[in-house]
Amino acid sequence: NLALSQIGNQMSNLTGVRAIMKDIQETLAARKGEEFINLSAGNPVILPEIEQMWRDYTQELLDSKDYGEVVCRYGSSQGYQPLIDAIVTDFNRRYGLNFTSRNVLITPGSQSLYFYAMNAFGGTTAAGQMKQVVLPLSPDYTGYGGMAIAPDSVLAYKPTLDTDAANHSFKYRPDFSQLQIGENTGCVLFSRPCNPTGNVLTDEEVQKIVALAANYDAPVLIDSAYAPPFPSLNFTEMTPIFGDNILHCMSLSKAGLPGERIGIALGSEKFIGTLESFQTNMCLHSSRYGQAIAAKAIDSGRLADLATSVIRPYYQHKFTVLESGLAKFMPQDLPWFLHRGEGAIFAWMWFQDLPMTDRDLYQALKQVGVIVVPGNSFFPGLREDWAHKQQCIRISLTASDADITTAMERLANVVTQVYQGK
Ligand code: PLP
View (cartoon, rainbow, N blue to C red):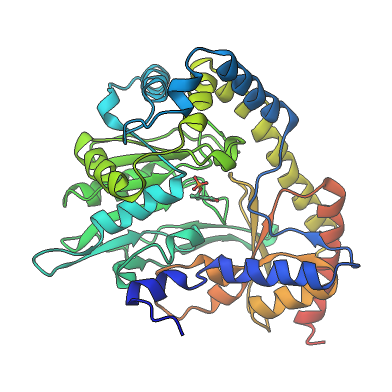
């Protein structure tokens, strides 16, 4: 038995959705002959126009005199200067801001950015105070679970549900009557658009959260992995929100570059500086090849253009296919709900009073060749018992139209039987 440290043990746990992903891989490997419709993927689809763009900029880099400087040298922890400049110029022009290069940090994927932030702003202070990482609306990104070195620091809040039973539709809202942001708040974190639900918090909701946190100088990290201007995976009107205590956090993963690991934080210098030092200790800096091609794609405007002309319509269409499938096959008289599809690359369903757990429903769907993700792994930091946690599933919008439709038909059959107690 390997004697690991407490943190070693903690970090080697398969947290959140990783445990399910392991089960899915094992199922697919063990039952090779069977055809599965896999709606569990978090990996974006490789869209030809996007791949071509990255290929073109790679070629440009290969042909340029900068190649050696980019790939054969260490760089600064903060990031590759042309990428930082491209971001500052793009955001200042697009949103009328006054950022300088001191307001940007490039990280190896945004996951690492949240790791730094959760542990720099959350956890026990020198004075012995436990600073919390507040997730104002649960469910949220499963990856936030397991990142905190002090797991007790992560505290999520149950939402209120805005339901439209006649249309089998619902939307989560932050519950401001419960949400506590105060002296103990180290930082606040949420995804907008949200993975897994596709929710987009309204401007007012965001402003309210930001104002609460501003009273305590706590940074609010807005995880914009699906937000405009790239990848622009919002299906409803939304504008990024900036402010003194906001860290606008981005990722190029859903803009076709998950393999290159590019995360970007944009915000006050004092927060950026803290995160930059954390990064220096952790890994020095992000890969410069990825940063160099990203700089070109942002500078030329091509990435933002393709985001709205290719990436967004692709997933928005998938959501309508899923919606039509549900409307066609699901029984009207059962209490199923589809979360409003406001963005991201997933659909989120809630089955009120489901007579089995989400985990059992996941198993039952596997039996008919459909793989989804049970919802309970998307409530990191939510301590309360809440039946709703075991009544949801996440469905990826990365499958073909035909597969999504077939899967919705099978889902309808399974769910009908489950509610009938068969
Ligand atoms: N945040 C959200 C909401 C995500 O969905 C993901 C990935 O799926 C991440 C962060 C992490 O992305 P990356 O580390 O690739 O930037």
